[in-house]
Amino acid sequence: MEKYIFSAEKRLALESLRQPFAVYQFIDKRIVTLLLSDGFLNLFGYSSREAALYDMDNDMYKDTHPDDVSRIANAAIHFAEEGGKYEVIYRTKQKTGSDYVVVHAAGEHIYTEEGTRLAQVWYTDEGTYVENCAAEGFDLNQIMSRALHEESILETIHYDFLTGLPNMTYFFELAEERKKKILREGGQPVLLYFDFSGMKFFNAKYGFAEGDKMLQAFARLLTRAFSYEDICRIGADHFAAIAENEGLEETLGQIIR
Image (cartoon, rainbow, N blue to C red; front, top):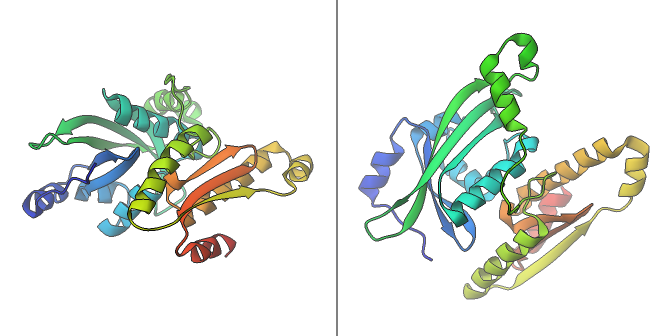
């Protein structure tokens, strides 16, 4: 499937809107960002549309609270594959500080005149997230806090609960499509595996909670070098990634540095 291209006039009109929204397309099992409004840039603290588009296509959940990533990523894929409505509540970190804000996202599928299916998602800022909301008397935050911790009711789970990365099954579906794309463009696909050494002793010394934090930190490190959906946590302390051979040495250097 080819990426849909808006006319210059329509793109300019949509991008200039102050309502926070985004338009996506599901291509080769990946969610591709087509358009972001000025309201979206303002809500999520971007001064550059190019930077926002890059993050959305390569590390969409970089500022999302780690406890929310798996849940909303699964909801997004379910929406893309199964249709229906998309509606999630999650926490995202403010770029100007360390606090999280609560975001309500709702979307539906739309069709172009040519019959191409796109997804339009609207975002609403519901205010700063308060950890101890019951003690502070924030009734709305208390309701949202409960919603944020509810388990997903989706039967098909695509993302790892700890890191938010694609799980092994879904990763190999994505990797197959990525491999085809690399080959079509004349490149050579490479599958990489990463394995922590000494994780058992680290957990014994510092505890499993700290071990989980290390795995989450390594997952974030991988997302700086690879596209978000080109990597996965296979299980325990094992990770994998698919990449193109050309430029791979430089990519691996980003991880080492």
